[in-house]
Length: 281
Image (cartoon, rainbow, N blue to C red; front, side, top):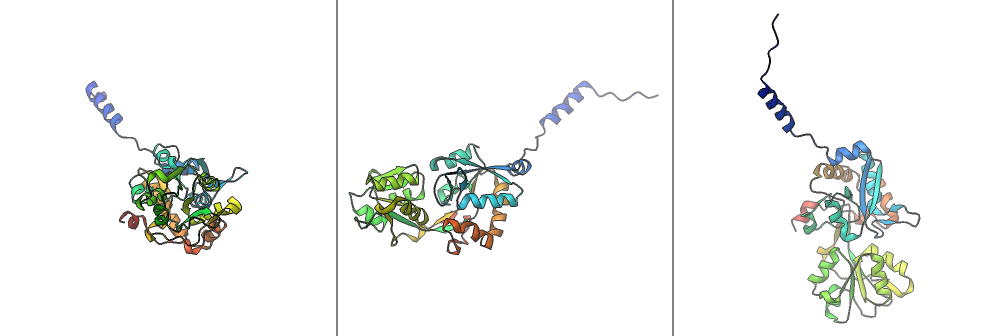
């Protein structure tokens, strides 16, 4: 009877070392959320894009879209994470959540930091002013030209860059953490004007009562039209691609328009703009 061939100890050690050195197949974020059925979605309190109701429910154009799209991908549980606007991208990059669903504009600067889906809306800006617009403010140029005017912007938004590029000095720009703070600044006359998306400023005007109003004749650079999208870590391209595919099939459908209608969006907010086109600007 033949005895089994015995491998030298050194050969056995080499085989074991090779086995241990082989890289393990890391689970992607898409695989994880489909396995667990849960995705962590960050938002900042800014109606009508994403906000918390008095009963604690998180709603808004972007969270409602996220709920439907992730359900289509087999992820029924969307866990909301409230974050101040300026902490959304840092928190995403730090792994505190998996996606930003806050109506965030796609800009060339942000494209360098995160991956965006193609936009799910387009929207222009307008101003929030004191009732009657006593300063006669209808553009960034008007604000820049009047050395007494103070502008309130939400920190981390595209409007801050627009204001700087229009020649408004930093000393006259009040950066605040929320849109509610913008409203209070104008109501208390700590600021003469606030700027933001047309839907947001109109909603603040309704909330603010008789002392404030949203302008209807804001003259802005057409390049300032905002394109909102969902954002992901740069390492999560498979997740972004899956979401983007489901999203683009759904946008413009009767279900989509019915979903966003309660937040003031309609077919006029649809866009064919792509991330690639914005990156090339």
